[in-house]
Image: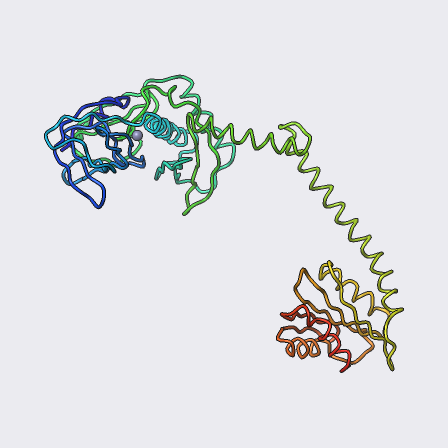
Length: 399
Ligand SMILES: [Zn+2]
């Protein structure tokens, strides 16, 4: 069983221990000491990294059966079993984990008080941390209330106390979580606020946690998953959000805090312009249809319009077809070079008796494509753009 120095002092970043085992594992080595300050992955908190002697510690695991802590090192150890070795823990990573983890204790209690919502699980990720709350659809005001309360506890800089509580005395404590094991339970107290059984590393005072900021929340598995950042992560997240907002503000030639109003205005302007474009296109289509009809081929009983468009949308071609056919006695065989894709639209006036859907199916089929539609209007496409003209000619020869 390895003695865990981080239980007594979470800020101990350098220590010495005696090497009890060195075992090869793949191209790595597992080192076991009689005592260690390295935290192993567990309780939602990732492991520490650092060095044992000169060897780099890349992972730390707990062997639950034996209570040993296994340090996975990537370099061949420059020490042997029986030697005393110096361990050094990466400070920034440990501090980051302490801030997020202690922040989680505070936030979980804050949600319990603000919303009666229990924390069901905790995950500390590389960029943000999450807790899952047993609450369905929280109001935004409730989330803000919990965030306010959590930060109030931080600003009060309360001490964080560790208690060793015998199991049979535990029910006299106002414990938040009910998962624990062992005869003596390690209870982490956020002074006069939260009591939670936990084996992790924590800040000594709530002020060390720094800002607790909720980034967002979503429904996951009938629970509410709250994403948050504490301390230095909150600073970096604020910085990134501020830089992004400032960049947008610069593009919009406005102040950062006026972005929402400005964007809403732009969306409104855009809607108005699209409506205006549709109106103007309708006018242009009337003129264009008249021009196409002038150039149409006169046949017995009807006029044939055959034309290929480029750089148009299919919607525009459809509106043109409707304009061409509205006066009676017109068959329109239209092609569209849609950025290299060969698309077709056939239409006819309501006074003619010919099934455009069947013509479309037959014509596109003959060129390896697909299409069909109603008797008066049909759409389709063929694979080869260079055959678009030939396809129209084929139908023109048959109608
Ligand atoms: Zn904890």
